[in-house]
Amino acid sequence: MLISRRDAVRRLSGTALLLAAGRLRSSESPSQMRLPSTPPRFDRYPFTLGIASGQPRPDSVVLWTRLAPEPHADGGGMDPLPLPLRWEMAHDEAFTQPVRTGEVVALPSLAHSVRVQVDRLPPGRVFHYRFITGNAVSPIGRTRTAPPADSQPARLRLALASCQHYEQGRFTVHREIAASDLDLVLFVGDYVYDSSNPSFLRRPHEGPAPETLDQFRARHATYKLDHDLQAAHAAHPWILAWDDHEVRNDYAAALGTGELSAAEFVSIRAAAYQAYFEHLPLALDQFPGERGMRMHDRYTWGRLAELWTLDGRQHRSVQACNAADESGGHLRWHCDELADRHRTMLGPAQENWLHRGLAHSQRRWKLIGQATQMSASGLETLGRQLVHTDGWDGYASSRARLLQHLVDSGVQDVVALGGDVHRHVAANLRVRPNDERSAVVASEFVTTSLTTRGIPESWMSLIRSSNPDILHGRSDERGYALIELGNQSLHLTARATGFPVTESSLLHTQASYSVESGRAGPRPA
Image (cartoon, rainbow, N blue to C red; front, side):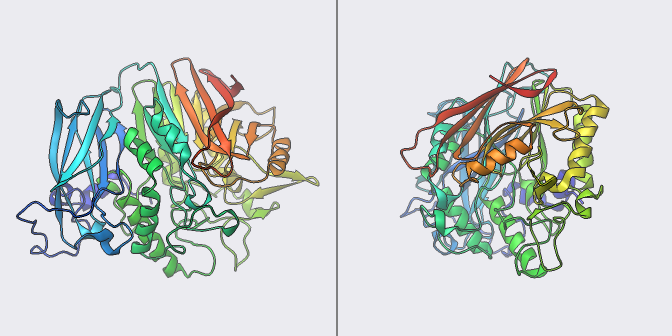
C-alpha cells in the first residue's frame, strides 16, 4: 500500500509541523523540550554538513540543514538538547530584500536536522537562504520556485545525476553541476553506498556497512562533508528518488539480501530511511513510519513539463528465478517467473497513480524520473536471453503495462530518466523491446554514475549489439547528463570524464541527443 501525503499529514500534530518534524517519534518529555533561555555559543562551527533546498513548486520550497560540529562524534558533537534556529529567505544574497523569516527547532531525536517548507512564495523566482543559531551563521544557499502552473516557460534546464560512491572517486562532477546555469538537480538514486569494494578504493568510508541509525547518520555525514557535493546542494534545488544502496544492494520491499533475517533487515531499513530523511531536503510528511516512507511524487514546470518521481524499491515484487536460499538480483536465463504478468516494479497503487497522471497530463513533456534503465539490456547468447533480474528486464510485465498504457491513452512526449547502471544511455522505448514492428512510444536517457565504476566497455558492446533499441551506450566514463527542455524539443548532453574521478578531472561532452515534440525516440544532435 502506498503512503499518501494526506495519510502522513493526518499522523502529525500541528506542533510537530511547527517544530519542523522535531517532535516526530520524539521520546523527549515536555520538560526536556524546553528551549535554552540564552542564545547558544559554539566553539566549533555547527554547519559542517552545509545547507540544501529541494522540491521546488510554484509556491513553495523545502530548506534543510543539520547541526553537527563534529559529524562523526556521538550526537554529531551536539548536546542532547533541543535548539532553535532562525531561517531567512531573501531576494538578494546580501539579505537586504527579505522575503520570509522564521524559527525552527532542531531536536536530538532527528540528529539536530531541520527542514522548513516555506509556503506562499511567488512563483518563478530565485531566492537566497541561510540559517542562524547563536553565534553561528550557515553558508548561503540559492534556490527557486517553479513557474506558475498555467504559464509557458521558455525552458527547463536540469542536471540528471546518480550513483556517487564516496570510496570510488572524488565528487568533482558536482563542481560543474554547482557552477552550471540550472533550474534544478534530479538525483535518481544511490546517494550513499552501504558497501565497499577494496579493488576500487580511492578514499575510505568511516566504517563498515551501517546497520544502526547512528551508523547510517555517520555514513551520510561522510558524504555530506564533501565540499563539491555541498556546493551542488547550495547552488540548486534538488528533487530526489532513491535506489537500493541507500539501504542494501538489491533489496526488494521488506526483503534484504545475504543472510539477514527478515526482522534484522526491517530494522536496518528503518534506520536507513530515517537517516536518509534527516540528511536531505524532503517534506515533513515524508517522515518514515511503520509502513515505510513515501518517495513517489509529482512536480510541474508551468505548462512545459510534468515530472513524476518513482519508488522502485518499497513496493516491488521480489526478484524472479531465485532458489529458496537466494535473494537479490542475478544474471538469469529465462524462467517461468519472469513471464508472470502480475510481477511489478512499482506496486499496483503506484502504477495506477502514474498511469492516471500520464493520461490526464496537459503539459508538453512528461518526464518519468526513476532509478534504473527501463529499456531492455539483456544479452542474446545461443538463442537465449540472459537478463539481470533486479532491473526492468526482471519486471518486463510492469514495463509493458506502462508502455502499452501510453499507446492506449495516446500520450506523447514521454521521456524516462534513469541511472543505476553506470553508463550513459539513449534508447527507444517500445511495448515489445527491440522489435521494429512495435512502434517507438517513448524516449529514454540514462545518466552514468558520478563516481562508481561501470562494467567493461567490451561487455557494453555486447549489450548494444543484443539490443538495437539502445542508440548510445558507454560504460567506461563517469559524469552526469545535462537536459534542456523547450516547447518544441528536448536536448541532452552527456557530460563525462574518465575513471577514477580525481580532484583535477575535467569533463567533456561524450554525446548529444535530442527528442522532437510529437516524435518519440532520441536522435543524435
